[in-house]
Length: 86
Image (cartoon, rainbow, N blue to C red; front, side):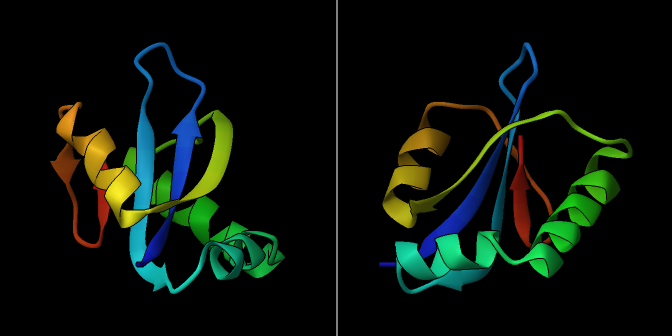
């Protein structure tokens, strides 16, 4: 099972962003990467690049591919290069 980072934004429309690259082998490995300041900067830069502006972050977490698939089945989303952007 692979794990990915999901960022939930504090917006009225419930926007979220899924980083599909890199994927992690465990939730613990994924969560450890979230605590690395270098990775935080990279994520903030990528989100700013995709949205063209800073986004208000409500929550960041690691979810399994299965959990993410369940979320995507119930939403409308558009896919970008390596990430999924709603």
